[in-house]
Amino acid sequence: MELIKDLPDRLLFAIPKKGRLHASCLSLLEGADIQFHRKSRLDIALVKNLPIALVFLPAGDIAKFVGEGNVDLGITGQDMVAEAEAEDKVTEILELGFGKCRLCVQVPVKGGATNVDQLVGKRIATSFEGIASKFFREVDANATSASGSEKKTELVFVSGSVEAACALGLADGIVDLVESGETMQAAGLHDIVTILSSQAVLIASKKPSHPELVQTIAGRIKGVIAAQKYVYINYNVERKHLKEASIITPGRQAPTVSPLENPDWVAVSSMVLKNNVAQTMDDLEAIGARDILLFAIQNCRV
Ligand SMILES: Nc1ncnc2c1ncn2[C@@H]1O[C@H](COP(=O)(O)OP(=O)(O)OP(=O)(O)O)[C@@H](O)[C@H]1O
Ligand SMILES: O=P(O)(O)OC[C@H]1O[C@H](OP(=O)(O)OP(=O)(O)O)[C@H](O)[C@@H]1O
Ligand SMILES: [Mg+2]
Image 1 (tube, helix red, strand yellow):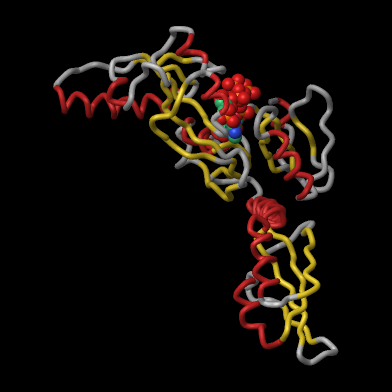
Image 2 (cartoon, rainbow, N blue to C red):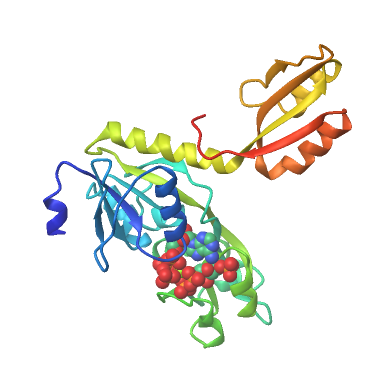
């Protein structure tokens, strides 16, 4: 941290140092042309082409550091922001579209509880102590007012491999993340409640040291994300079908329409959502569009 104190002129940008979000963050930085060289074992890297220092921290600590203003900007999961109770202390600038998962109450498929009320007074293993205790305090309170019993659900902290806790006899249920559901199913568990949905986000402290640089980085990252989300489509269509074509590929403002030598035909180009592009091409073919070409977008500002 001494090195950080020596960097007053640089914006401090925290990146998860390992784990699920690390690789996607590095590719975002590359797409945003944030150039750096990280020396082996060093958790600080100076950016060569901007007055920024990257700080590599555990994803779980980033919300706290940004919330306290120790670093200006960071990428972490919305679950981590909630767990650090930093929702009011940071500004969420942008959802990044990766690290998507749900934080769920999970119980054994065989012989486990069928709803959360049946977990009152039982043991729950989790590494999300803050969120889980808030959730079960409410479940306990509802059970108390319904039945008069004052049982308290017990939380057992585990730092990883949470799914093993039930099989090992440590807990009757767990609170942990689910993405594909593979880990949960392999452990013989199923989810009975989703406490929150999460994805990676770009967050800033309430008073960043270089507000204009925060905007520059946010703009660049927005461009990289939009470029991943859209492709560029180009095709020829008979002028009489232009209205239908514009409905199929409306673009962000409007499609670009250019005349062709043959006055009955026009060339159309437009940005379209990547995840629906096969359907878009089918629809264009159905109205007689020809020479449909698709291009990847390297980067953009939209
Ligand atoms: N399976 C997953 N799919 C998608 N996103 C996930 C998944 N697991 C975790 N995440 C997201 O990534 C963030 C960091 O999780 P990660 O597993 O990298 O950290 P960790 O559990 O503290 O570290 P590690 O697993 O390396 O010990 C989580 O807070 C969550 O937002
Ligand atoms: O639904 P899935 O696609 O199976 O993903 C969910 C798993 O991913 C995370 O674990 P991670 O791999 O980070 O290991 P950890 O338990 O050591 O944190 C999370 O804690 C779940 O165990
Ligand atoms: Mg993990």
